[in-house]
Image (cartoon, rainbow, N blue to C red; front, side, top):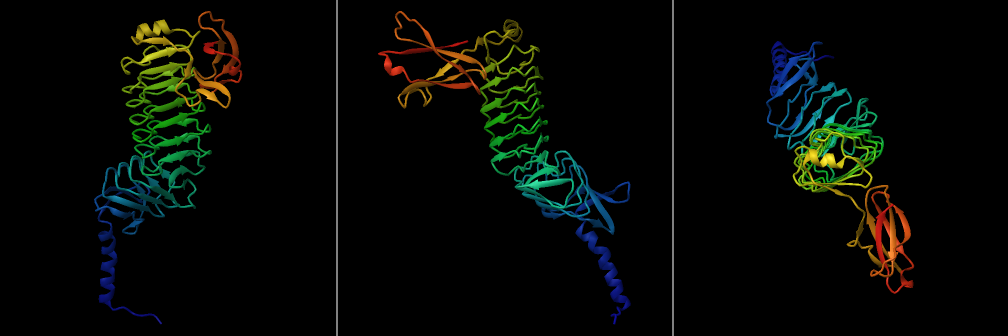
Length: 393
């Protein structure tokens, strides 16, 4: 048996049904898409936990426009419900107090830098039924997990890039708390601004699978002190390591042949070690730190002209014995030391017993893997005195 409502009840119910969406969604401004659905174009609410509406006045809301919440410090959490298909560019960028984002299964497009540079963001969670994106440990990827789209700005300080990832997206780690990142050899692209403003990042090793380090990739990483560039890298983009105020030395592989304008602009470089010939474009280090010395290997070319055109000091790069190493001296009945030089170079260790009238004899040839080699001499006790030197082969 159906319950009948009187006309007054029906009238009041109709008023409530019409008024409720307006009250709940007055904080949003909508525009109409070409298909008649709605796009959120502005937000004027008080922040906190925000649940994006899926309808307004019976019309479906399917998209969130560009920069709608950008720089909005009041936002702490956001839920993007079923029905939303598109999130615009820079929509939630620089939301300093945003801690978590939930993305529904219906989202098929996320614009560039949608969640970039939000330094308190702990996790981005994607519905497992979504066929375009996925998340793992709060990190946002494309569906096949080949592109790392966004590392949450307030996430873990130590992060290993998953083996499936081949592309680190633009602004993927921008302004995050990350201190160390392990980049696998499966990665072949680091896009623009990928690590810009990572103030806590101290070291990074970039594999040779990455041919180009894109523009501004590590710009402003002020704590970066150790950068390892592996053979295979060909191009260093504009300001790629610019404004890295604690980066004092770096080794440039012989495969690097293209330098865009000022890849180390306003860094703190004092020593630059080149494994190959002088850069073909002689303005490669224009506007970089005054007084940085460029070290070059024997049998490499172009350095006289390089020094003349750049006005920077150059010097021959020679193998070095690391006397300050814990491996220097007597170790388990052997005398030894570490030798540092360019990766793949060959060093001959020679010994003599009399420095007044030395007769140097080669006793071991060392090929430096990874730029270093450990030498040890188990015969040192057979001599009253034993002296060593190293030379290139």
